[in-house]
Image 1: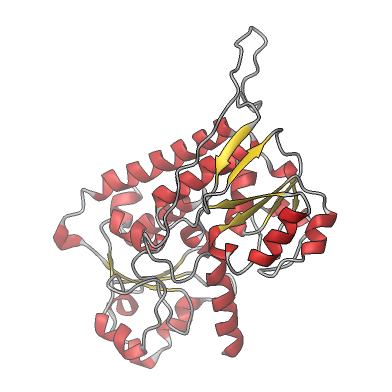
Image 2 (image 1 turned 180 degrees about the vertical axis):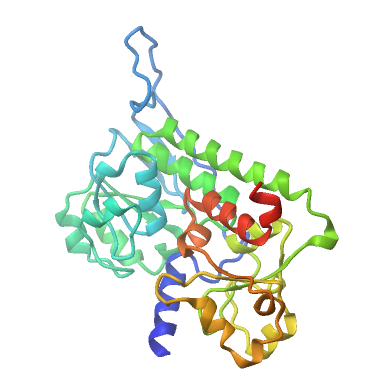
Length: 329
């Protein structure tokens, strides 16, 4: 079990474990773009109209000016890596962390370590820009300062607490990579999907709201308020039975059973074979509604906890599992 616990702590730290809405003051990204002269030969599609130099105020209020579009980027957290690839800038990524696992093409990129990245390795990759994350900026401050002192520009992306914050992150990464059009498209698609789901959820009357227990590990850690999972459940008119708790609390078996959820959502099926059967085998859970009615489902962890473009996909998956009669039609 110790191995389970260590895995959980490491993983949740990477996605911003113990998040709390509004605990950090985040600045809106600002840009200074050179004027673009419109001509008949002006490019469209995958070629960006955005111009450099561009000045960005990052999550720590650092003002960084990129004179030219970066060609070599090192990303230091999975959500950033995934976003860069979603913006069709994956060919710029020359280094990533051990935890970066999506899309599959990222596995061909050289790693620079985990949370304690190898500074010398990063420098050896000769990046133009380092994209780091506010959640690890303080614990990695010495390493990031070494990178800055070596002449590499370091940009800190905001630690998204809510879905709206994710749009800000994607927008900033779009500015850094010169993919502002793609960023706008990704954000628009996410908003449209979430708006459609939210609108459809309004059809669900208060008396039909389903109570949900989210289990992020067999040790009964769950998602409380100020997590993406809780926000998505609220938007879908589901009731998070742990919604009065903050972040990622641990419950006792007795506490969960007393809450008697209608649906159980697990997020660890990729490393535990058949979590549904494991839950159904728990003797104390036999009378829980979700067990009695066999409403135990597993969703892909990264789509509902990672602050990236797949959050809308994760929300759609949750909707279809919790309210199949509403969202499968």
